[in-house]
Amino acid sequence: MAKEEPPSASKDLQELQRKLSLLIASVQSNSKVVSFMQSPVGQYLDRHPFLTLTLLVFVAVSAVPVGFFLLLVVLTSLAALVGVILLEGCCHNTTPVVTVRWP
Image (tube, rainbow, N blue to C red; front, side, top):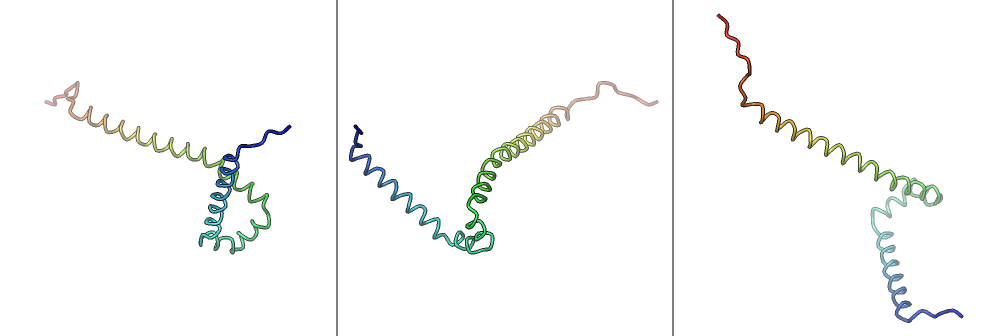
């Protein structure tokens, strides 16, 4: 015997479906999306959905390591900059240990 869902869950699912369909309609009616889909590349990807999905997954998955690499570059550059500033500020006012006097 199957347990029936409460009526509120059904209403929630219908509301979610309505919101999702409105979101999809707004994306499909975007002028940039329409112009891309009318281009030769957009038409090719529309006819080859598996290739489109593969490209989408590849771009999404490769964005994470690229983002981490760029974050590492920025943090390394900041650390080097702070190190140079501290080193120059720290060692600039010191007197030399050995003084040489010429006759």
